Length: 113
Image (cartoon, rainbow, N blue to C red; front, side):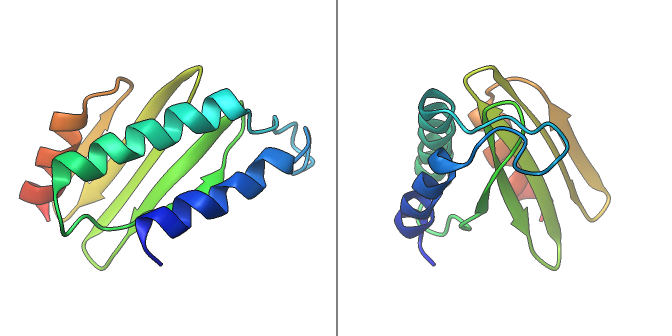
């Protein structure tokens, strides 16, 4: 699946209701989705042509999860209108944070793996 197809598919999450997971998960808001997709597009633009497409899944608290998993790389970014957090591991290198630092994330993805 390419990036635009994955983004289009994420529109489905706007129809999910609160507590869909029976653990108190909050609906995905349009605002939260917009923030997540905007961040994802910035990340893809900065990364370049060979940007690996993440899985986009609903997360709690009005956010989306952007998730990459390959043989070498695991990266989870939870992003929405109320902020973001991320954690990744690749070989011996880890990254984590809570701010929209596109340059830092892209540099880590390219260098570490």
